Image 1 (cartoon, one colour):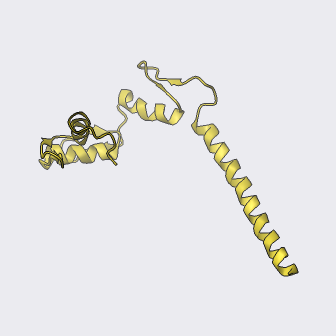
Image 2: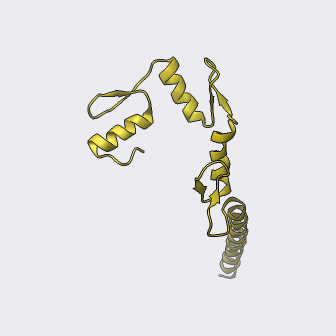
Image 3: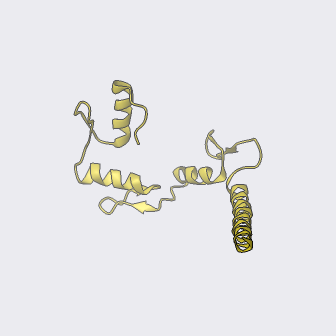
Length: 126
């Protein structure tokens, strides 16, 4: 019985210490990621505001033109990899996005999603 209690105390101690360190790490990351004030972070170029610095940094790529991904066919730049992939499929591979409900074709997934929202009442696309 004594060995069981000793083992149980060790397991609890390990769990407790790992939880404390995990919570501390999480709070440090949140302090760096999210704004601590109630005010939103404004974009210096336009009127948009953001909840956290990371979102503002991502948005700033629109204004600064700092793109990480470039099309191998036409050298157009994109801030997100999925946008480059979609561009390549539509503009250079001739692919279209088809509605699985009515068969209508669209040049971009976002346009297809808008069609589904407006004409078929679908709100979730995952």
